[in-house]
Length: 514
Image 1 (tube, one colour):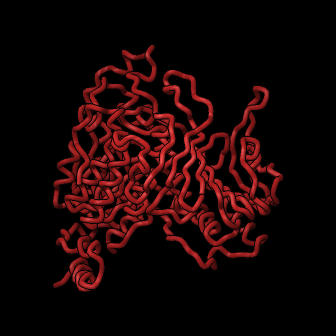
Image 2 (cartoon, one colour):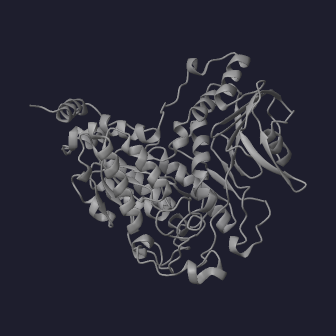
Image 3 (cartoon, helix red, strand yellow):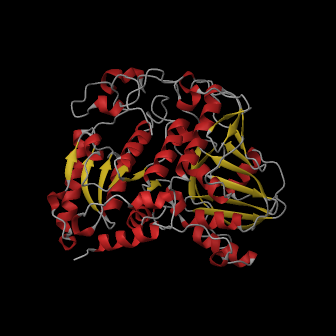
């Protein structure tokens, strides 16, 4: 008897004969028959983000058969969570002991019984795991930023094209309605022609420092027998153990120390920059491409030694059509689109729009007005910016921006914009890829063998934007750029920066290669 997966494969194989080589590569290898006809998934990296993703995968049409972390306590905690879930959901018909714990991700990547992997490790591991998993016939969900360097992004694109594997980057804002609605408004000309976009996120990483708090180095660096720190370091240079780098056990915070370390992350540029610049790419129709020039910041340097005396914002990315993306501080909005007929601001659960001649320069005063909803340079149509605390004359007070007049929520603000400006988002001529949930979209696309919302034409290029801004701050310079080839142009820049070898000259373990 032909099962559902075999039937699907045969139908797709017939269509592949007249389709693209990528589609044929995606389905030609025989797929393994998973438990209950569902694809299997392995979770690699089980910190706070990884545990959140684990909970999401457990609710999808797949079976979690492996959990992997170099910390024994996190690994065993995840195994317990999965087994308890399957015990409590007997209707799924999944035996609790189907899930096993593993300390070495390489065994998972080489395991033919696993269809998908989810990578939620620190950034310096992302590209190697993604590439090796795809080369071993696995579809991959990887957290953002997708890469630690530009060179890694180029390899991911090449391997995804060659293997036909399904890739999803965890740029979950694309699955948020307020972001899709804002981007569709931009693409359908609601605010006219957009000349520049502002993104708010943190600055670059810091030069290597061994401890977060030198006064507590003994406790911060105390041996941790539950962690394979050699595995945690992986492709990075050897450094002393720090529980700020690899937090002990099951922790309930997002580690900032490794994100802010040159050896392992890209600071706020890679963290929130991967989210907000991704929305710029989406809204402006720039997926699969990037800027042609990076203009160095003229903002003042950060004079703290542990920030590397690096500038923290002000870099500009200039595209071939003249669009400018500016990295700013001093605003509560993640992404702000400035059109010649208005301004759209968007962030998680927040939305605002102003109507009028938007051809004016931006500065801190404008950003503050847009954040507070007090900007009077244009007509305010809708505005909801959530709740936040501010301190005035030493007194902290909570600001609630919800109003019946301009918006009680992001959804309400979008509805008011539709009513007052005379359009319906659902009736727009130009519609964007609709996804309700990043993980659900991935699992569904693995089954259907279709591209995800943040596929290999999206994630790698957004990651490159993070690296362009980051290297501009690290080296305090601008340069010309070839977005198609992902390399410097016109004799500018330094090829070493593309692999960040100038930061990690001795790190050649686990090389990311096609």
